[in-house]
Image (cartoon, rainbow, N blue to C red; front, side, top):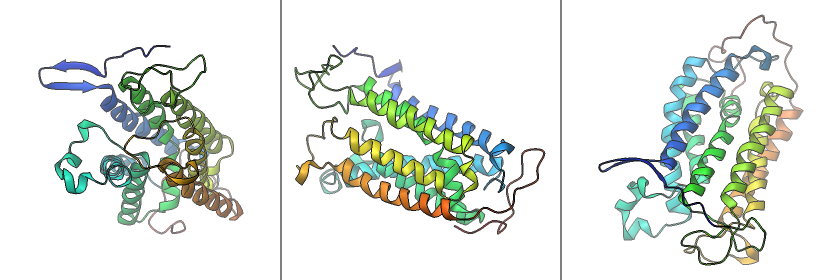
Amino acid sequence: MTFPHIDPVLVQIGPFAIRWYALAYVATILLGWRYTIGNIRNAKLWTYRPPPATAEQIDDLILWLTLGVIVGGRLGHVLFYTPALIWTDPLEILKIWHGGMSFHGGALGVLVAGLAFARTNKLDALRLGDVIVAAEPIGGLLVRIANFINGELWGRPTTAPWGMVFPGAGPLPRHPSQLYEAALEGLVLFLVLRWATHGRKWLNRRGVVMGLFLTGYGLIRISLENVREPDSYMPHFPLGLTMGMMLSAPMVLLGLLLMWRGLREPLPPPVAQEEAPLAPRAGADEPA
């Protein structure tokens, strides 16, 4: 199969360009924000505990998380994949429009931003994290599709009938690994978390949804690293490991720990409610 050659620029007005990649991040923030607000206001999800924040606090949180994604994603890419930029071309670090964002760096940025917001507003950071990660696969879907449109992060050579010849990747057909990631890190993981939040009502258990996300994403990323072509500038690690595998392994371990801890914790008595509950006052729920 031949790469479809979709123009990565949607609209060009003079020097100003609107790119699919940037739109993917904007759409992720907007859709994730509305999905989270919907979950906060859905009284059926909060049988044993009230939501960890109000809808108004989620509105404020979005700015913190946006900064966390951008700063963390860019710094993560530099530290994990291109550390030479620090001493060879430090100004390039600021040029995020040139590309280069790390999921793991963005996740750490969101973690720091979420912890800071929870501390500032005296909220339960662990339960706030449960609500945040339920919307993350929206970004996993949209950003990976944008990677495909950009013709970047292609897979290893393959003889599969759906192998694709990417521009700049040589003449061999390769796995469209961006689409694999969009399907698994995006759609499948979203459905798993949706089952956890709406089917099992696990937003009532501290850290379980976050643990499920960390475990699910980590396992998916580790498995897909076997078909994703490592960046050419990365060193060869022993045992066939990649940087993505090594960064994802701790996520799996932490996720399993959070799930084990949260599922063992006894639930409080059911909350009597007829409509969407309000978020707790400061100190009304357990600390993180």
